[in-house]
Length: 133
Image (cartoon, rainbow, N blue to C red; front, top):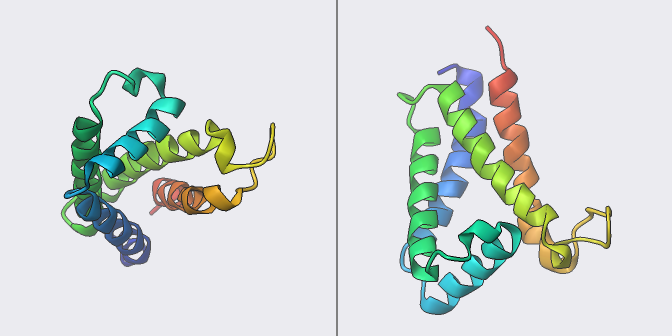
């Protein structure tokens, strides 16, 4: 891992790991709310039980956060995983009208500010993937 990869990997990894750890003991209300938002954007998730979804999301965030933090994981691999994960989050944001303006206005609504920040994770993934030498 190159020294210049440490700050973005550390920032994204710590943030995502913390998010996954905080979801680990989530209650039924949290599970239902997160599942509803995800299933609204990605209908194939409708058949997944909310608690199962929350456990899987928590595990994925913990694994991704750890991969970004561990120097042994190649940067390109960690960046691909971050790109896929954050791309899914940004896709959910774009597909949830309550999170942004009407139509093609993607500026966040007050409810969307917390989710709109995921575009930074896409930027970090792209930067790590495009880095040369």
